[in-house]
Amino acid sequence: MSETIDLAQALIRIDSVTPDDKGCQQLIADYLSPLGFNNESMPFAEVTNLWSRRGSESPCLVFAGHTDVVPTGPENEWTYPPFSAHIEGDMMYGRGTADMKSSIACFMAATKRFVEAYPDHKGSIAYLITSDEEGPAVNGTLKVIETLEERSEKFEYCIVGEPSSSTKLADSIKNGRRGSLNGKLTVKGIQGHIAYPDLADNPIHNLAPALEQLVNVGWDHGNEYFPPTSFQISNIHAGTGTTNVIPGQVEMLFNFRFSTEHTAESLQESVHAILDHHNLDYDLEWNLSGNPFITEGDGELIQAIKQACDAIVGYQPELSTGGGTSDGRFIAPTGAQTIELGPLNDTIHKVNECVSVSDLNKLTDIYYQTMINLLAK
Figure (tube, rainbow, N blue to C red):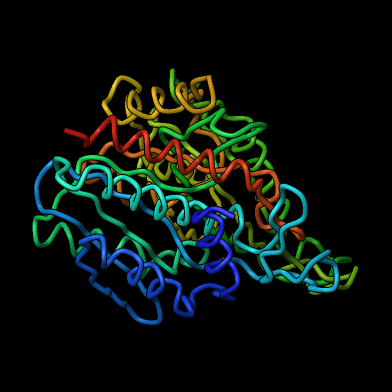
């Protein structure tokens, strides 16, 4: 087995269900220390974070990722124990194999190879690792970035190891993500007996015309980087569970995945305008998970990665902004060129999550070649 695979197995065998790191970051720090990295633990509340840096000069390339994983689900449905990192043929099975401990292992092995080959490389190399990506994402990368910004510690490039590949390794890299805006709407009415509707006020009926308008709005047409903004309802709840009571209120949860054609504020204003137009008595709570971000395709980081992929796998990745949110949303606002490049994403969060061993060795080579392209003298 390669050093990449040994490292991946060591990390995956730690049952670090979010937000408990369970020692993963100490393993990473112990590996990086002999390579000249200065390790700094940044705990916030129950979350463990690691900031580790080699050098102080610019440009600085950051490898970002998370050691926390989602729960396994029913363990008896797994072919192999979910924290065994069992290898069968070319596949390694386990929670976190694809999302995203294996990418961290690739970071580590590539970094060691690069530092040994180019001990006097230009610039700096750093790691930003959290145990709060799969959870609320409040005390993880966001807090580390705030700390770095407060002390004016900057970096120019960031590779997030999220599983970005679709059908084959490195066929796609994420050079941006849509924004995510959540809403909890409560429309108020008057509860009453269903046989006496004149004595009640049905909030479901009142909401229906506004809901139709919200669903049918063409929010925007997207742009060269993003698909059109999407409005989706995830839950509607009302009533007492009986057939003869008009409910006193209806609650609705919804989400916008939005492009750079909108801001969170412009979407909020539009929603309130529609609800007010229909004279609804309502409360509306907003939660912004992240703003959209984009890294231009002609920047040094993307060009370095494209050249590395061409050299290792024989093709260049397509640029994509699809999928959910990632911690890149906290990093990109610093001004750093930020992309996501990792293994296939077809088994993430599933029973029998797995990753190709040969892909991990190639991914290590891609990271290594990218470092050469950006930092070798």
